[in-house]
Length: 317
Ligand SMILES: O=C(O)CCC(=O)C(=O)O
Ligand SMILES: [Fe+2]
Image 1 (cartoon, rainbow, N blue to C red):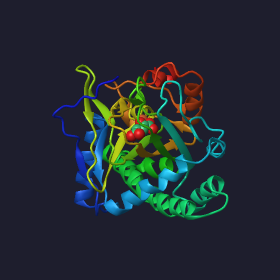
Image 2 (cartoon, rainbow, N blue to C red; image 1 turned 135 degrees about the vertical axis):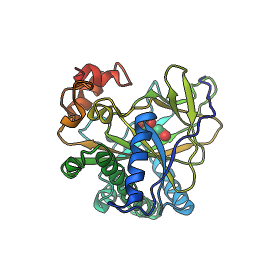
Image 3 (cartoon, rainbow, N blue to C red; image 1 turned 90 degrees about the horizontal axis):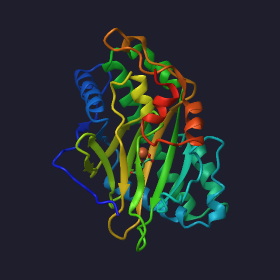
Image 4 (cartoon, protein in one colour; image 1 turned 45 degrees about the vertical axis):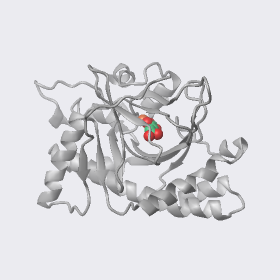
């Protein structure tokens, strides 16, 4: 049994509402975003348009999906690692997830729903009509965070071409409560392998982030209404030549209710390269350029380390 811990630390909260590129408030927020990602590797973004009602509809729409027979679930496949239906693993028996690529495109969500519910009914409709707008909204937030980070570092000129080569993955996740004598660890301690991850969770909670490596200090993430967790990853850390922190996190189940979460992540099609602006005598290069999906494949074949050591051993200098 892993005991859940908490500290007095307050997760940084950044208001991302009503900001227009080029304004003073945009610029001030960009610096806050960058500093939060450097210092903690994550923050809570308040982002309009995600009402409590929408949140309830989104999480309610997920439930019937996980009740489908295993043979239907298994139809959610992909040739990319960690995409497609994944679930219950020996080390995380409580975990199950489905993935939809580029869910901000209506057609992709509909194709997924058609696959899961070949004879459309309410479940099919509720899923498509809530998950698609959700993915669009979170993609807007993702776009904003990325643009802000590039600008705040003074490498805004690379943003458009970098972002154009990104692709997204929406993961909907369920954790069932543990049975007697079963682990309560929903997701083992890890750092993320996409480029950026934006998370939300239902009222059950359970996401914990390590905020102080030396002191083994964990913080429980409790989301405000209209807010999302924005989290940096190992590839993001590498791109910034080590400036951004990739925070270790885990999910701990308490109580007897199912937990649902949604993670929208991005990946780079092609090579992640450190901008030359990040490398100088004081900051020597820490990572060689690497192909994001090739790294993912290598990690999937040999996941010895769940933390940043996997990327360091893959392309660290
Ligand atoms: O369920 C969560 O809140 C976290 C999921 C997670 O860490 C992941 O998918 O990488
Ligand atoms: Fe994660």
